[in-house]
Amino acid sequence: MILENSNGLLLKRNDGLGERDWRSDDCYKIIFSPYGRGEYQTPQGDIRIDQDDFFIFNPMDEHKQLHATKEKFLLEIRPMMLNAVAEQMALKGGEPEFSVIPFRHPQIQKWMSFVSDFLSLNEGSHPATQQLFLDNSLTQLSMMMLQYGPGSHQTELPTVKGQINIDFAIGALKESYREDWTLDQMAEVARMNKYQFAHLFKEEIGLSPYSWLQLYRLFRSQSSLIHSEQPILSIALEHGFKNVTSYNRLFKKVYRKTPSEFRKLHGLKK
Image (cartoon, rainbow, N blue to C red; front, side, top):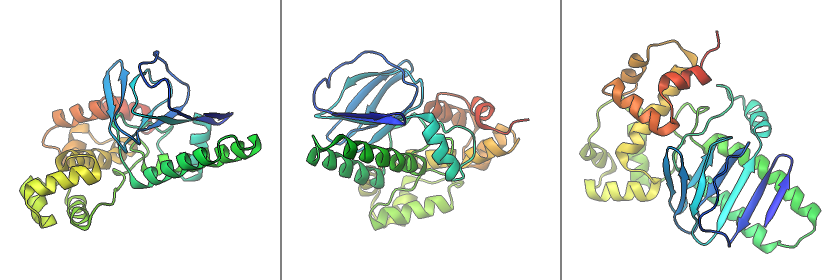
């Protein structure tokens, strides 16, 4: 099934799930993986989208689908529409650029599940009904991408609610993210042993505790990069990184560009 209009499209299919051709689209593309692993190839390396994760390609990102499990489900949104929604939400920092990391958020999962079920139950309905549904879906998803999708517009990593033990730990990490944390200290806050804690954290959040903390530090640093002229070394150390090398390395992994390149694209214009 493909529904399309001038603002974007929605695609849901159960065939053609193997390798496809290279492509780059002039739109934002959010891909869901509801039933198992999805794999995409890019010039910079392969991307694996685990079950219940989503991934957002930015406009003109080159990619090639290698595999989708059971179903291919995605939406494309034109930059003009996403920018208009961002403006209405009073988001700053220029045109949004989403990070190159698969992510998981329960609100996105619930929305995706609702849309998928609605399409299955209303397949073959009147075209006007389908277009109305598409219009509303693209608007809703634009808001949710900007709210829960990690990117240049965020002032911190979007929060994911987990079990109460995990929430305690995340609250403590957010409050003291500049401090050095060991896995033992995180587990102590959660009142669990470190092996149980690490397993449950990854299961609930989709990231290891330390990976989450490093990403949280990076996203907290973005506001300083965009809205100030502080030296990058100062920003890195101020936000909990031990040195600028590790900060640069993570930034390159998350955005495929250095902090300096990110600042040049999204930062203050002289």
